[in-house]
Image (cartoon, rainbow, N blue to C red; front, side, top):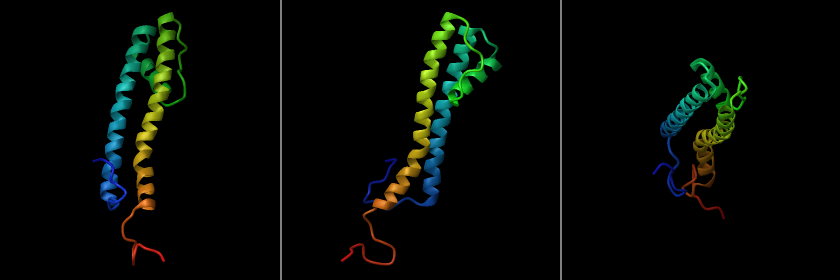
Length: 123
């Protein structure tokens, strides 16, 4: 199981770093695939060189917007759809990277185990 239950002991720092690196790896794959899709689309629909296609796709994935305005009708449709897709990828990747941190904080706050230095019950 990727996430521990509230009754389980919080993970160690080494396990947390491993979990964060796993999420970074998964996010990198999503970004790389998305970048290749954007580059292929800009190259084929707008007839841009690969470096210009890379720049446009990277700028959209980063939330900045395209550098070259599309001129063909097919290119305009691709650019609009890719912009919507890039916005979703940006949100998904941000969530994937923040999830382990938020989970670790929430888990430590709500852990139902023993408290350091004493009994878990408060009278």
